[in-house]
Image (cartoon, rainbow, N blue to C red):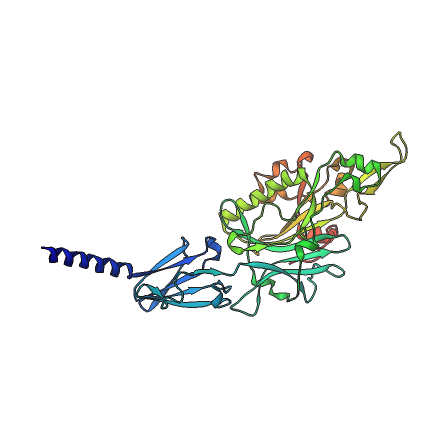
Amino acid sequence: MLSKVILFVSTVVVSLTRESMSECVISFSGDAMLRPTVVRNVGSRSVNILPKEPFFKYHEGEEISLRCDRGFAVPNSVTGEIILELNCLNGQVNGDYYSNKNYECNTVTWNIYESIIPFTWCSKPLQSYIVAQPMFLHSKLNILAEICYSFEDRLIQTMHYVVGAKSSKYLIFKNQSRFEDYEPTTKIEYVAETFVPKAISLDSYENSQIQQWLKFANFEMGAIMPNLMFNHNEGHIELGSMIDIPWWSALRLGNWQFYTEALKEHVEKTSNEYEILAGVSGTISVPIYKESCHENRNWVEIVDDEGNKIPLYIWNYLKNPKNDVEDYVIIGVNSPFFEFYNRMDIIFCRNICHQIDWLQKAYSTFTYKAMGVIFCCSVNEVIESKRLTGLGIEL
C-alpha cells in the first residue's frame, strides 16, 4: 500500500514538473509602446502579435521571434538589434541565457533637423526645419512635419503637416512620403533649452497706453495647432516653445476650437486626410492718442521691449484630398480690437465659410467678435491679396 502511495506521489511530481517545463515566459516593459512585436510561426506562415500584457508565454519546443523596428534597448546584450530569435527548451529561454530578462524597444524620439534647401513657402532669411525620426531598417528619416521659423521675430511662421482620423477624440499627425522632397541635414540639439517658453507680460511694454489696452485682452502662448494630438504610439516629441504663438484666448477657446472640433468630426466620418499649412501673419495694432481728449489717434503695432509681436491673423490652408473640390483657407482674427478696424480691411476676401459643408454647425458664431472672428477664403483669392505671409504658393 505504501509503495503505491509513493508511486502516485512520484507520478504527480513528475507530471507537475513536466507541466511547469512545458512553457517559457518572457517579460516586457510596462509601457505598451516599448514592447516588441512577437512573431509566431503558424505552419509555413507567421503572425505578428502585439502583447497586451507585460509578459508572453510560449510552449516547450516552440521558437518565436521578437522584433523592434527601432532596435532593442533592453537587454544590453542585444542593444541595437532588430530581431531576436528565442526558443523554449526544458522551460528555459535559449538555454537560460535570455531567461528572466526584460525585453524593451528603443523609445520613439522625434528630432529637429535643418532642411538642406528652403521650403517653397519659407524663403530666407526664414529657417526651414524638419521634424523626423531615424528609421533603423532604412537609411531614410521618417518625416512628420515641416516648420518655418523666423529668428528675427523669434516666432514660428508656418507649419506643414497632415492630419487623419485616430478616434472620436483626436486627430493625429500622419507620416507622409510627400515630405521627402526636402532632405534633412544638421540635427538641432537642446531644442527645449534653446526655445524656452515665454509669457506675455504688461511690464514688457513701455507705452502706458498699450499696457492699458492689453488689460482688456488675455493673450497667452500656445501651440500653432491647438486641439491636435500626436498619436500616443508615435512617441515623444520635445519642441519647447518652437511652435508656440501668442493666442488671444477668446479666439483659441472660442471659434477656433469650434472649427477644429468640426474638422475632427468631418475627418472621422469621411476617413479623409488633410494636408495643412498653418501660419501667422500681420501684427496687432491699437489706437494711441496724442491728446487727452482722444483726438488725433495713430495706429501703433504692439511690440514688446524685446521686439516680440502678436500676429493679427492665425490661419490654416487646408488642401482637400479630393482634387475636384476647391481648397480653402480658414482665417482667425487674433485680436479683441476688431471693432477699431475697418471691417473691409480685416476681412479681405469673399467669405465662403457657409459653403463648406462640414462647417455648417460651427460657422454660425464665426462673426461673434467676443469669440474671435473667423472667415474663410478660396486659396487663389488669398494668394492674389498677398495678405498672408507664407501663402504665396500652393502646396
